[in-house]
Length: 288
Ligand code: GLU
Picture: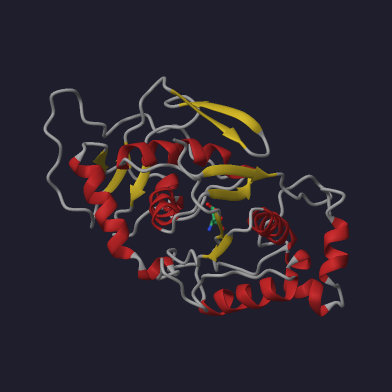
């Protein structure tokens, strides 16, 4: 007997490290359209783990800008819901539990290397921000007893990837994608030396706990999906479906980022733009 598919649950996951721009709006608009087409639920999650860069005014502005743009969600930090809290800064216990599980299964190891990618591990790695493949300096050698050190302070914890394994998935927008562990990406940080969970762990834990059935996000996170699929497997969790949307670029072909202030939703609105007018501009993936 066929089991009924779980009801569709999608999510919007802004990081309040700056004002949202037209690229975010497009990705979120597609996420909303997918949820509506499926008669599903849309969750808003505030990804505010990066205390050094997060500002509460950006979180408030994000909700306001998204509402102005015409986005509506059913669960979130402003309206609650049964899978809350919806701010990552309030979900530490979930991350600690998942980390303990990964550790018990020998899937992670402490790493004392100090590298630029360790500093970056809090944020989702967007285009041009991918870390180099970790050379494995701190990887335990066969036969070594796993460290009994507690998470933080002082060491970063890396997820050990199965070298040579091809991680593939059927993306809803990009078709079949395949990445080779150890070549396209290496052992990645899941817990930082300052005691904060990294993006790759937090996003898996939250998408699973919030029963997300499809993740809609920018195409620059395709490689992160391969990493996250390994984390799902190590935790014994069923991954959602993935749909990675094409990125908007500026007139120089550069992916829109929070530094493109002129294309922030806030600035566009202040200059008299309308949401419908903004959506017109998406016909051309290059905006200026
Ligand atoms: N908070 C992440 C970002 O804004 C979202 C990444 C994701 O959708 O998984 O980059």
